[in-house]
Length: 129
Image (cartoon, rainbow, N blue to C red):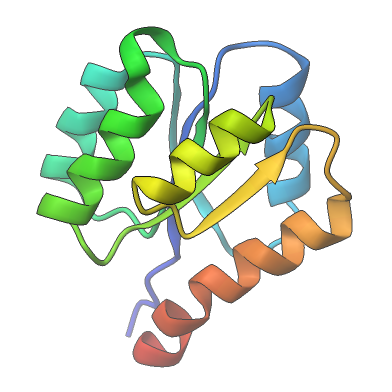
């Protein structure tokens, strides 16, 4: 029997932040990165068509993209866990108001980020293994 890997979609603009979170995710056993995007409309399309366990996104995406993606997941894909990376406390509050499961201010401790990803995946792992 083939074990399914937990799947994560990264919606973060290219650059050091995206590279950093991708590097941190390599420490989470057997996680599969579905794609790395900066386009929120493509992210919605993937979330509609594929199984995603975690949506990792950056606050401050154009046209309130992060808030719209979190709201979409709450409405259409309630099993998807949303983790938002925020620049400011205002962005963090907005992400929580829209239903983000976890919010990190940029500059977060790496170990706390990894532990949070593992926690968000724990229901998936318990259910499939």
